[in-house]
Length: 300
Image (cartoon, rainbow, N blue to C red; front, side, top):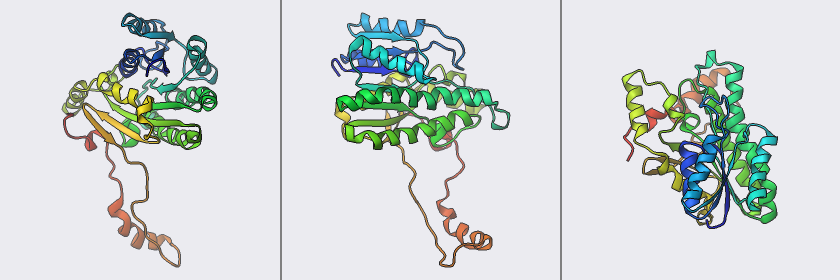
C-alpha cells in the first residue's frame, strides 16, 4: 500500500471513513471524498471530508480532502483530478458514496428514483470512468464498489436503491472484463454494518428492532480490511467477484447462472408452458425473499 494513491468516495462517515483511515495507516495516500450531504443527499458540508483527512494526517498518514459530488461526469472527473494534481497518480477507486430515499414502489416519485440512481449507479460509473484512462496508461489499477443485499436478494421500499446496487454488480463485471487486458481489476462488496444510512431504516415492529440490533453489532471497521485488501496487490487473483462482509464472516455471493432447463422439440405454446415447463422447472425458482430471510442467523 505504501505510496499508492486511492480515492474513497463517501469517506466522511461510516464504511468509507473506516476504509480511508485504514488505507492511511497502511502508508497509502488517500483522497477523502465526501460531499457532506444528509443521508438523503440534501445539502453539502466540507466538514466530514476535512475531519477524516485530518485524522489520517494526525496519525502520520497522507490525505487530501475533496468535496465534489459523484453524481455528474464533470464533478467525478474533478475528484480524480484531485488525486492527480495532489499526488501525481491514482492507483485505486473505492466507490462507496451513497444516499437513501426509501419509499414503497407505488408511491416512489421520479425524483426519489433518479436521485438514488445518480449517486449510486451513475456515480460509480462516472468516478470509475474518470480513473480509467490513468489505469490504462499505467497498466494497473483497482476498483472496489459497494453493492447491497437489497439488490442481490431484495428488500421492501427500496426499488431505487436495489436497482442501483444490482446495476453496480453488472458495472463491476463489465469493468473487470473490459479492463483485464490492462491489469485492472474490479470487485464488489456487499457490506453489513451499522452506519448513518442504516440508522434511517424503520424500527417499529419487533422483527425490525431485532434486525437493527443485529446490524448495530456489525461495524464499518470489519468491512474496511476487505476493501483495502481488494484494492491492493495481494488480491491480484480476485476479479469480477461479489463478496459479502457480515461481522467477521466473509461470504462469496453467487452470480446468475442457469440452474435448470427444459425443452420441447416442437416449441412452446401457452398451454405447454403451463402444463409442462413450469412444473418441470419450478423446483429451481428463487423464493421471493428479503435479505433478513436469507441471513437469518446472528453475525459472528
